[in-house]
Amino acid sequence: MSTAFIGQPVSRVDGRRKVTGGATYAAEFRVPGVAHNAIVRSTVANGRIASLDTEAAERAPGVVAVVTHRNAPRLAYRSHKAAPDPRVGESASACTCFRTTASTTRASRSASS
Image (cartoon, rainbow, N blue to C red):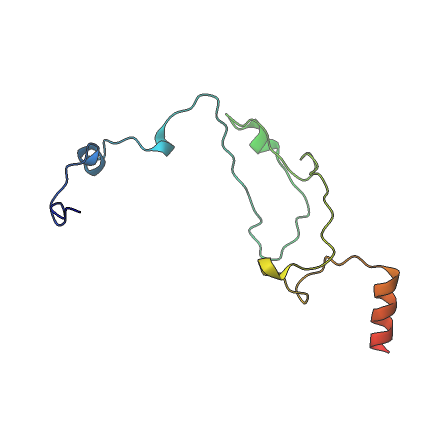
């Protein structure tokens, strides 16, 4: 294996454009018809949203849609698994996704008695 290049400058095809600001990066390519989104969150920690007024946002130039809990498409429901999976870091104390059955209800009642 040759080590002749170690510590030596290497000319890069795109090097000059990158250091002078002339290079075009992947995020800078214009793609026609692309829509971007912006998520607006509550400005009050632990606050409760009492109402939403989206009229100004809907009238703003270039806005395609304003999506809220009122008009968002419903996501497909998938039931949780019956027990926590420690292989992915879930623990029984943190998981609230247990299915309650008659046998587990009886077991928990007898354990607490």
